[in-house]
Length: 99
Image 1 (cartoon, rainbow, N blue to C red):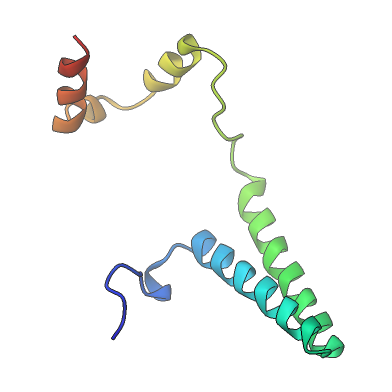
Image 2 (cartoon, rainbow, N blue to C red):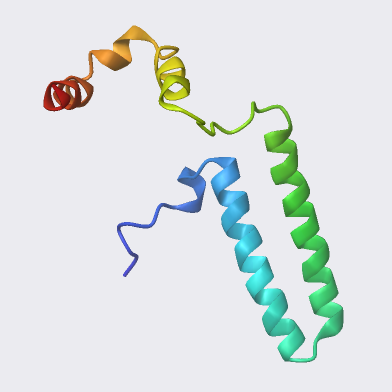
């Protein structure tokens, strides 16, 4: 029986799917090396490099990952969010809990 907590690969976004595939290929390459199947291992490494290239291409045009250096930096980023975010019940509850 399938695990209900695991998403079907077709439901994953491309990046998540590529990450899972890359991890699987790396594990399989290790098994191939242990089994002495070096030709298969090299083919697996080429596939891993292709997957990694696709991941790098996805990240090429993205802005840098948020890495806050101070509370002011976090506040500045939060204020960039659209107003509808601040109307969400969970956000409203969190703000009231902090008062």
